[in-house]
Length: 400
Ligand code: TRP
Ligand code: SF4
Image 1 (spheres, rainbow, N blue to C red):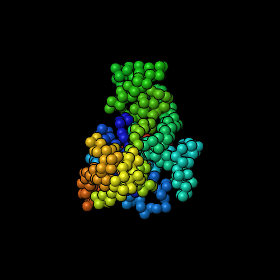
Image 2: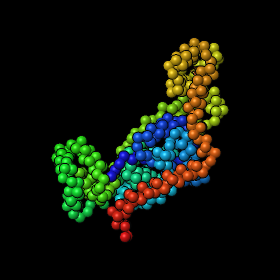
Image 3: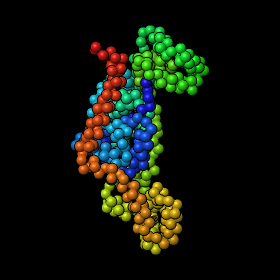
Image 4: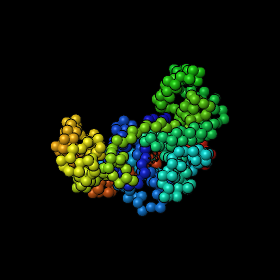
């Protein structure tokens, strides 16, 4: 029932830069080889903080999708869509809001942190408070069990698991649950019924997690079980109700080591970025004007790479030989800073070359991007609908 499915989203708040590439996108590109992946533009999430600049949302969304494609996200492997084009996210958000204690939202650490950090904006809104719940809806609606995110999003995933458990606890109860679960066990056939019972006992009596995992994978392999029975058997392993929603696992994305042009972390708010599809002239100019070790006032003054942001780039892009050349040449003043920067310029340009190449057809023909997204939205709507049917029924809304 709960096949491995990866989901992640990104807010369309501006051009993606090389920090996003090295941190997030390279990771997505790897994941799409291994898993079913859903990647989406979190435009509603962008509005929770950027509600007063709606004019940028659409442009940023299309640009961001082109950046994804440029980075190597393959629409024949991953499903790409836009959150607001799958309105069921909003429906689930509303339904989950019924069972979400206010205190849980107020206690999510990003709530107060971001309000303080973005103090120029009024974020005492209902939408901003609800940010993590909207994220939960994004995840739970696809029963996504793997969610790659950065460290800052970990509390949102923890919150999502709590919401999922609360939902299952409230709506997974049904009269005669035990009897129905026992009947469902019989449908597994005698050999597998016996195995299921053994594993369940081992987990419940001895807390053996490997028995739980084995039982879950046994259930995952059952193809002729209907959804209701499947939910009962999953729920019966751990508790006394159906497991309607799954609990997503965090796949922690390691923070990007990408330095910015000034040596701080690369970030739009520090104005020190190289964007993913920046043109060669601009890359050249930006790197050539990068600050260097301030001790090197004249060409003949020796310097120390440890005090120079350019060195950070060599650590990311250069091989040992080049690094040695930098170390010796800088400390002895045998090379000038412009010489030193050239291999970095070359490396960034060659990293970007395939990205420009992949992006080209999409930049020239935006309908290609529109079509990819239209297909992705259709697929996402279908998948979302499968879960929503179950959720509406559980919450008394199936009006047959
Ligand atoms: N909040 C996430 C961020 O700022 C974006 C996001 C929205 C997301 N919905 C999601 C990430 C669902 C993973 C899963 O990075
Ligand atoms: Fe920096 Fe290279 Fe100049 Fe040394 S030579 S200060 S490492 S740019």
